[in-house]
Length: 327
Ligand code: NAD
Ligand code: LMR
Image (cartoon, rainbow, N blue to C red):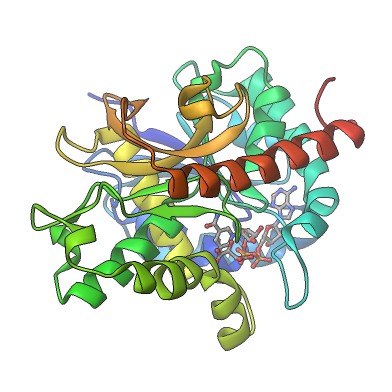
């Protein structure tokens, strides 16, 4: 009998947690049973206890285990998958840079705990912002875990881009393939349509350049801010859904014909400096990802990718200065 998939979820009492946990319990990652390990800070444990009560009350057939703790080593013990959601969200007027110092310390401690306690097969997906640099901090503080086990969430950006292109072309979302998010999960990200297909036809033949540059790119890049302004708090259900999509595809595979976007530790591909956690188009299979090779990058794409990667390099420098990663 296959053991349940042990999933650690941080920020269990938060907005994203409230959506994410119920989908995990309901089997959104596949038919395997799940054992959920919820992590919260001590003051939020009572609220998380309420969430745990509701999980029990769901009587989910695939929910084989449930535990709640404020100790990262307990939460990560033997984990196959760690979904690092818990962090302070951006509020109106805050930049991601403001979050670096606020949230960085969380990820040094969690990196060390993952290093000591996680299972041999662990995959670590960081949703908490600034997600790319938090993933970098986590990875750098977990030197015994292979670097390809860390990813930051840019699937929400990918999904937003797919949805915008589907709406513009009057197509179902399932008709959109080969879209790519490059760089940082921030307003500098680059949603690349140059290889995208709509029902097998090049997207560039279906939309004009002015729409791409003046509408599509800014809409996707600033969607998080637009949701904060409209809702009064940051995106939660869509972020949980994207976290599920990313984890499911990582563990189960994208299939050979489509790509997704994941921020992963760069091997230097496409001129992205080694070691930065940057988003790339990837395919996945058997729990592994591979950057889509040999794509032609035109001048416009190059300058947009470079701008976002420069922001990631500056964030890495900032967290080095703060002593959150080794020099
Ligand atoms: P929230 O404030 O509702 O919940 C965050 C929870 O994390 C809180 O319950 C808090 O107590 C908990 N937490 C804080 N420090 C913790 C720690 N050290 N260990 C465990 N838990 C801890 O926030 P939210 O709306 O759920 O958002 C969570 C994070 O996700 C934010 O950083 C937000 O900006 C980010 N986010 C990322 C994306 C993305 O696409 N990458 C999208 C939306 C939101
Ligand atoms: C989002 O993209 O919705 C989140 O990262 C929230 C934010 O701060 O933009």
